[in-house]
Length: 166
Image (cartoon, rainbow, N blue to C red; front, side):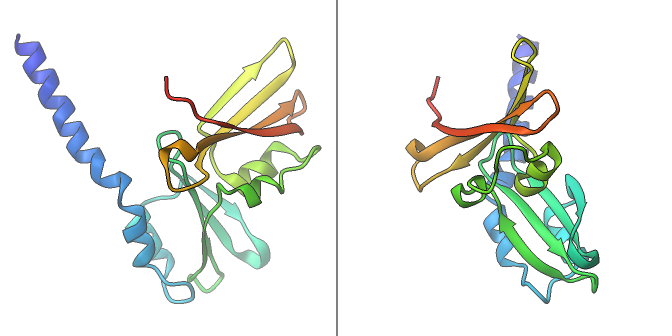
């Protein structure tokens, strides 16, 4: 009995700590302004980035993934002057359309951020990367975008499907 009480208390605490994180992104974004906010402002609001990519002209691109639970990934560009020059949510059909056959996996990762899931298919000599995204305002608009890579980690195909609740 004690175990169940402690376990329930743990779950309640975990839910209380994690719940505010899901709805914080719009507030964090509203507090930042392109050309004004600094790298310190970005990291104060979003924390340390998942990855840092080299950008054009010495800029750095901070990756903030919300996968696998969320349906967004943010790329925030920090210019050479230390100020934020762009903040983009990159999981969009327009960005997915830019993923073309032959593109290397690193280029796709830099475009879309961390995937929700990576699944190897050894018999087919393929690896599938999945990103969850919202393609509209309703839960019924939730989809998964998949990029299929060959054994050399180059794109061979893409596709989107509706997420079907289990």
